Image (tube, rainbow, N blue to C red; front, side):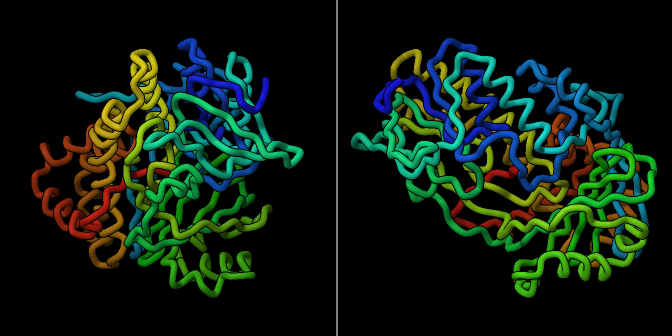
Length: 423
């Protein structure tokens, strides 16, 4: 197939969002090209957490059983340790009005998960090419008409399509070429590594809050943890060139986290990513959609983000199939995806902003922990929201006083930008 080949769609990036999009489009009979600069499997900094509702999409993609067989660890909820050391345990609700596709989340190494998805992609008619570095877009008036890339031998290539779908992450070439990216007021940086130590019960994620920091632990196997620490971006300046030492010192500054990790050792270099949050405006031209982190990233506090990637792929494919079917990939025709994405994710982002507001203030964090301890049914409802199967508005319907916290969190949102919560 030549560099000038025509496709119905080109997907830039083969992470969870891109692979899912390629799979679903190919299954609908679309000719689709998926390009990624990496060779899979590849390492990727991630919380490595799949919410309970993620299982539904994995089942639709035909990989849920494969994920289970690969050793994914069931997580039945989360424990949260507050600044004063108080610990509360939340469980995904399994009774009542809402129920997840499964009653538990999953933790799985990202290299394993991405390999499963890309293997499934290879099994479809999609044209999947690794080590292709997309560098620019091909424009036809006010429409994206394809991409420019370098192949594995460094030769320039041009590919044309009726629709280009950017799924190339927080530093998306597609979004940046269209000048859609702007800074986000939430300035945080994440550090992540793997730690091994004493074998203990590995059935839920753990969050440690110690303003202005917080840490997330996800068990990937007995005695092996994915450990991340999120700090203000300004505090991360001394980490430059000495990530391991900074990470170790930050752990020691978080007393309850330090005690939890006593006897554990780092068995991988520390990775860093920041600033975490970024605003991305909806495209102002036709022929293009943005999914996953390419469409905007908001620090989710819980380490969750793969569901957002897969769900946004699902939404984009539904709109793309209709647009390609009627031969109309104009801005107006594709706006349905933007509207659907906001309807699905905006309320969840409000919850995440409220949680971010809480963790900035030690006294507030301790008081909220006390409320959760006295009202475990509220904590479980929050767990359902985090698990992507309880509508966030259910919190306001059952606990109207939370609307005040949500309103205060909304005031932290940049007035001229819109962002969507992802990881």
